Image (tube, rainbow, N blue to C red; front, top):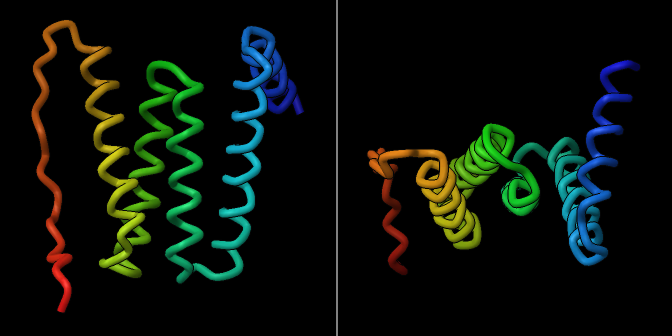
Length: 130
């Protein structure tokens, strides 16, 4: 109970400094995350639910800073990658994964004093029709 009270207090502090549109956006994506997670729990082979879950996490990461944002982006990446294991040609998961990688780079650049980044090239998927 104490931990959940702290989480609620932290959320209220964060909401207090936000404008109405940002609060509405935060609540929208939190609801979308919960719905996608629930759908995935009902059907773990649902690549669409995983993609929506990852997309919501990626959007929610914009409301966080530092290690919290990085952790949420990494969780989003894992959801997109999991969706692509189920359906390697899922174009929206590929698109979102690219956006998540871009967000990771931005987080690393903003937290790096030298702006030196090394890239770990992921797997390529032949997405050509046929």
